[in-house]
Length: 430
Image 1 (tube, rainbow, N blue to C red):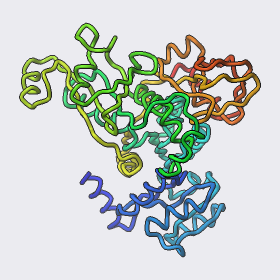
Image 2 (cartoon, one colour; image 1 turned 90 degrees about the horizontal axis):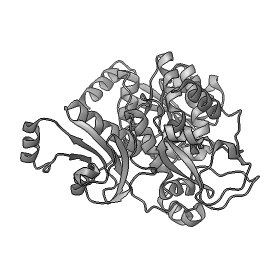
Image 3 (spheres, rainbow, N blue to C red; image 1 turned 90 degrees about the vertical axis):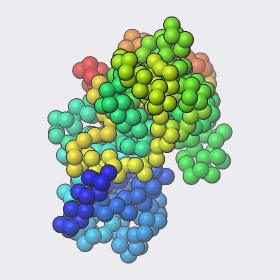
Image 4 (cartoon, one colour; image 1 turned 30 degrees about the horizontal axis):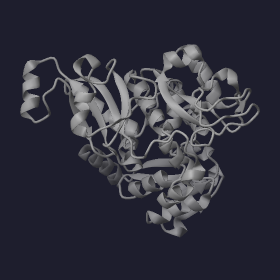
């Protein structure tokens, strides 16, 4: 981190700074604006927001003076404002990547169809793209990543998001010489597959969250999507559809995440999972083939082996994103990318009996929830990834509660970028 501070200070000394465009100023986006405002050499120069008052609040709460905030949808006015050192609010998302001085675009929308469009257009305009939109990454990340490599820009998930935190722990474990067996996260919320925003609206508003966002946490879809992104980065799959989801404590994880023949619960290694009782942390289960290392791990109070758990008891969401922004722009180093391809998928199941002809509500809605499975099984059974549901996705048949939904059961919005990307990604075998 001192390297980051030093290099940003060098930028500041030269009268320069990293200029960022933020798309979406909800709870995570507003936190990021405030965090960046305290980091020398980095600036949130423009916020794209369909509700400009939210963006204004983000700036004002971070200490920006009202007279320094400019609202415009015009490129020329935005460029002039940036030249004067002012802060721009716009409803025109094309300004996020269309301004020459912007070096990185941060997607904090959580909207898969929009995220796919934003990522591709940013990359095609040679902008680094930092995704707090794991919902998009989990379904079309591999093809977006390939596009970014071709254009020599960085596409990356964010530090602080659980996938990024898991990946950092995995990188540490492998870099130190351990064998990585399993990774996962703690789950904060109770699990209720059938939760709706009507059930959770009051709680969500108290927490400053959109009701659909909290619903996606509680019904498990968010966890499945996050683990899918991790799986696609590491080449892992769930041990069973939907994961084991143990209730446990951190001292027990290493012994439980062993093979069945060793007294554990696993059918195989190289898996992703989640646990109750260890939130908000992330974990990695590791082992080693050297007796001396096992001896030293025992001496270091890491357990009796043969498996050990490495645990990080926190993840700070968007408050850690500045680290990814710096690494992406300056070091050209992503935090987490789906470099192994589409290894796992979060597919769609019905929350309730659904009728032919109805339009589906996607992630966090009242109609469906997500479950992680291997991509091989998703293709074999023609199952619909939940991230492909858009506002015009319509059922062609009746669907029973808890029934998996296949491509054949729906009319997709074929002209959406995310649909076209996923089709191409599958054709290319990414």
